[in-house]
Image 1 (cartoon, helix red, strand yellow):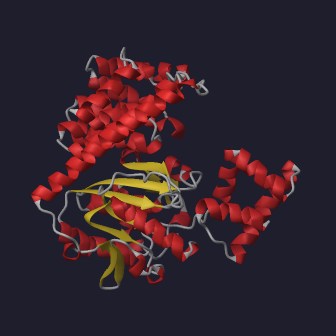
Image 2 (cartoon, one colour):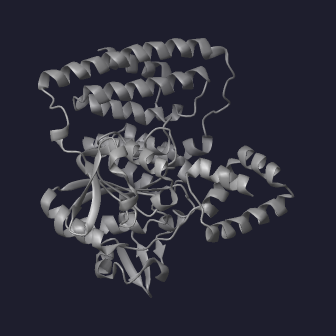
Image 3 (cartoon, rainbow, N blue to C red):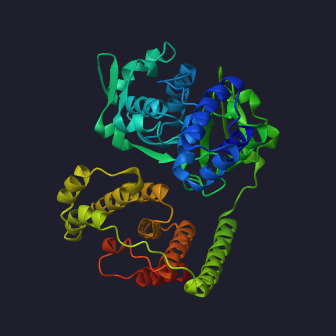
Length: 443
């Protein structure tokens, strides 16, 4: 049985106390009995069956949460953070947030203060996030802790018979995405893009080394004045001497992590910034050429059978047709009427971005394309559109980085003879977009 727990820990980073082990062991024993497998065979089965492994991780995840948990931290946001920052827009990540109460709490608080908050909610256990999708929260989502903020929830939904129903508008403004904090892959957001990260009540299940690794990785996502809020009982667990760019700070009884002050860093001059970005830009050019050469060599490898999803094409064709003739209001109505499964959300946000782009709202369009990429990092149509917007904004470094990633994805797509996105790109071939990526990086 310990081998199974070792596998869960390897994937998620979770440590188990004895009480929790008993609960999860009961589930594991039931599955092994149902499948007629011993422990070693069950581990092989888990490695060969991602869905079974996902169900096991869902069972192992600790999903205890409620609205406005640790009220003192929301007091801090309302009474200190908001007055001191005076921002009209915020980008917030509620990480490891289980069924979404924390994300909704943050959204409601900022809405109460007329702040346009773009809130992202992530968890490794996407079955818990189904509660958010349904938008119904019962008594167990409320405690006396946090009760003074309960009225704020009426800005995001309504109460009926002690059940809270999240409204559609609020649900659209909170983006849900799967993310494993123990992953060493790509981060879920661009660097220096977040104002606030809430990451609470998960580090108590991590070992010290993993806590530091996670914090050092996600600190790159913070803006210069961004903060990371941990649970009060987790702050003492963090050894700041091992953090690369974060320090502890407190306002009254509330502690949080922020980026180390500029006084500890080398001050950049305009010339040094330009020189550094030019060097990075040239690096992207070199990498791009190298990647193209390796793709050409791989052309003879196994081809993919991934072709256009005809059902998806039929469902979305009315939207793309309306967009192509600039009938954006009609396109929006049709898009809003379509129900997307989680595995298809990249299409949803891509089309939303195209509508936003047509309405000349580039910031909103950029956000929509980024959401699409969060759901599928290989979805090159959104990467390409993101690069175009960054080009228009004059963000040369990030434009080059985006077109480099886009070019990689398109080259793989071409080499495997895929055509699953063809209905989104009108009559233009993937090679056409690949050449444009090359052009934008080099020119």
